[in-house]
Image (tube, rainbow, N blue to C red):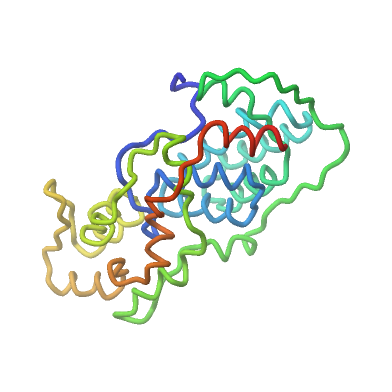
Amino acid sequence: MSQSEETIYDGSELIFTRYLYSKEDVMRSLFIALLNKETDEALFWAYEIYYSGFQEEMMEYVVRIFHEIYEKRNSSQFCEFILNQYAKWLDNRADDSIIGTIVWNLSKSHYDLNQFIENYFSITLNVMRTADPKKRKLRLIFKETDIDKYKTVVTNEPGKAWKVLPQACKYAVHPEIRSLFQITNIDFRKEYCENWLFYAARSPIWCDRIISCGGFVVDNEKVKVVDEDKTEEFYQLYNYEPDEQSPEIQEKSIGNCDIPQMSIEDFIAKYVNHV
C-alpha cells in the first residue's frame, strides 16, 4: 500500500500520549471504534491524540478515514457537511469541538471497506455497496460543553498525580489488531513502568510540561530538570506512577500481549460480511 493511500496510522516510534497510551495503539483503536460504531469510545481516542498535542495530525487522520471508507457510501450532502467542518477548523484551529463533530457523525454513518482492504491488504472483494438513500440524517454539531468530559484531567493535590490514570483511562486499546495492522510496539511494559516520562516527552503536552519546569530531554533516554525545586514541583503534579497502578489500569494502556490476534479473514467476516 502506498503512503498516499494509507489510512491506518503508520508510526513505529514509541510515543506515550497524555494518559500514557501508546500513540500507535490509540490511532488504530480509533479506527476500530469507528467501525464498531462505538461513538463515545471513538471520541475518547480522538481527543486522546488531539489533547496530547497532535491536533493537526488527528484532524488529517480522521479526514483520510472519511475519504477512504465513508465518502462513497454516504450522500453528497453528508460529505459536504464533513468537509465544511474540516474547512471551519482550518480557519479556526482553536475550536476543539470540530474534531468531535466530525468523529460523532462518522461513527453514526455507514462505511465501505472494499477499497481500504484492497489498498492495505491487496485483497479485492466482490461486495457491492451503494450509497444510502438521500434521506435526511440527523447531524450533530458539538458545542464547547459537549467536549468537557474529554478535556485533560489534572490534579490540584500535590503528590496525588497517581490518581489521574484511574480516573482518566476510560477505555482499553485493541491489542487483538496489532498483528493485522503490523503494529510495531507490542510489548512495552518495561518502557511504561520504568521509563515512561522519556517516551511521554515525545508528545507536545508532556514536552511542554517538562520545559515549563526547566527540564529537557537528553539522548540516553533520560529527562533532566536542572532546578531541584522544579523537579519536585514537576513530580508532585505529574508523576502518574504507572508502575504502581493496578493491573487493570496498566492493561488498558499496554494491552494484553497474549490475546489471540484477529486475522484478515476475521476482520472481513466482522466488518464487511456483516455490515
